[in-house]
Amino acid sequence: MSIMVLVGAEVFGVAIAAGWAIAGLFELGDHVGYALMVLFSLFAIYVLVHLWRRCIAAEPLTGRA
Image 1: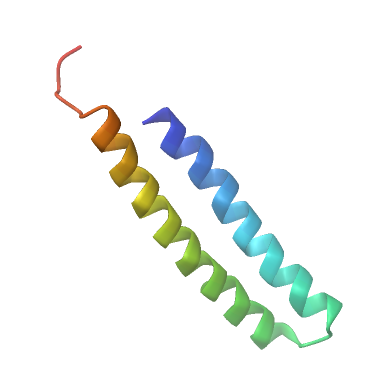
Image 2 (image 1 turned 45 degrees about the horizontal axis):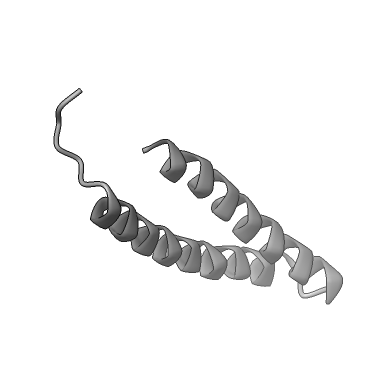
């Protein structure tokens, strides 16, 4: 679980920063910047779902301490 929190924060931070940076670099405006942030965040969700599946396959959650 802790790896999902760490990687999730980093991936979403990169997604939002990349959208903001690309829109600013090419002077695309606020609306395009927000659209890029959403697009990159959707890709981040895709990456996190696949990471979650791989983590569960490697070490299943059993509920035991």
